Image 1 (cartoon, rainbow, N blue to C red):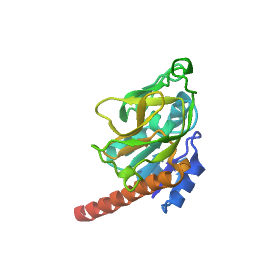
Image 2 (cartoon, rainbow, N blue to C red; image 1 turned 135 degrees about the horizontal axis):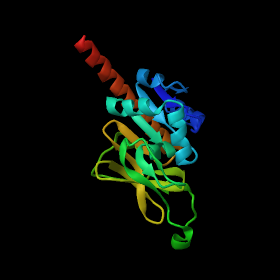
Image 3 (cartoon, helix red, strand yellow; image 1 turned 135 degrees about the vertical axis):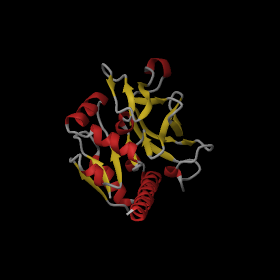
Image 4 (tube, rainbow, N blue to C red; image 1 turned 60 degrees about the horizontal axis):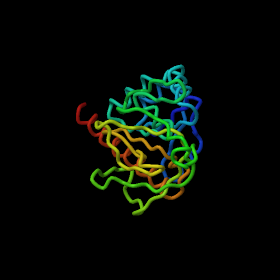
Length: 221
């Protein structure tokens, strides 16, 4: 079972519909205890970083999300949900994040310097890291385009893998992760065919995890 975390700030139903189109059932939950029972967890996000982080904490999701990341269970962050996985953000007066992925979140340069509008909004090409295969990117076209809406982006440290980048006044991390944790700065649920393929890949990854976890439990008991 895939659960989508409802902490009052996410694009919940769009994400749920995206998984439905991809052929995977996903349920929305506002109960932190459901994360322990899930096979995979999705952390969406819309809005300001600090408001989202504070809401996660207030609603009791902070520790269950940290436990999910450490358990080996698949975890997917989307947009602000991606940013929340990092150590901190400079948005507003600044805020700490979950610290699952090492690095910090920064704002795009002012339009007066780049000539580009902020927020970055629209379709951009993903540039996969061909030296670092990622299960989310399996089966995508050679030049996949996905949909972004954001003013901030993460700068990961070396311990965080950058699976794909995009370009907007310079390259930035578009898909990152480590081990069982993945995150996209774009919205796969709004990215039509390529995005549905990414959600399908995550769903398949969850299924493989659930199967291996069940077999391991059976062998141990």
